[in-house]
Amino acid sequence: MLKAISCGREPTDVELASVSLPEGTVWIDLLDPTSEEIGWTERNLGVRIPSRHDLSEIELSSRLAKEGENMYLSAPVIGAATIEHADLTPAGFIVTPHVLITVRFETLPTFDIVAQRLEHDKTLTTSMAVFVALMEAIVDVVPTYLSTWLLP
Image (cartoon, rainbow, N blue to C red):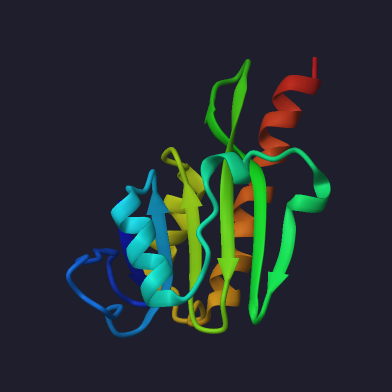
């Protein structure tokens, strides 16, 4: 699924027949993307979309990279979680000067929370602002699970 997310608007599906993003797009979210969606994103935004395998690399040296003006980050994030257990899933972040591109392979509540926040929060108008909001949301859930697992 390929979604365009803009400040002050609901997320919209990107038409693969289009050659441009909807006006005001600051975040492209690729959720379990098809090869067509990956190709569209690479052609129209001039980025390299990492594969699931690339995002799952455990080498620290492969987690953060800069290519031209774009910053690439891969990180394991908490996916499905219960009181007793949390699954980690790979996620990719590409911060470009104009748009944040995320790549993930399962629904992540933290991403949905930030997407909803963009509908109302007028401060999230840049790719970096959205990236920081996502990092805050991801980091904010960790203490909840750690306190549940570590406290008697």
